[in-house]
Image (cartoon, rainbow, N blue to C red):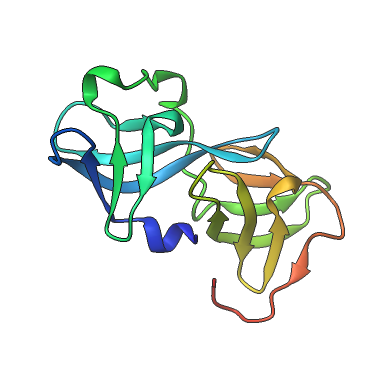
Length: 150
């Protein structure tokens, strides 16, 4: 799934079916490259949801554990949202802004990082900072077949 498609979805409590927020962004982890947490505009206290608290990505909503059963996601609270950051190679080549992230909805694995006219394998992800998302200098950076995320 493309993150741009998932952004803006309702976040719904699996037990009560109550909307607890709206998805606004994500936090990436490396080794392996995955979505570690989702950022949300809450209807309550939590602003981050650990990936482990997600039960399903439905066509209209993200289903999560009840608040009492959710893991504390404070470790990722200061981590920057990667979308819109510069996509850089480890050697400093600027690839443009990160426009989208293709990920697996079952485990959060990052499949592709997509910039304007370029993409990198999720496995090439080295880190995410306040300015840039850094990927390894590998042949996995290939020109996109089209200029829009799939």
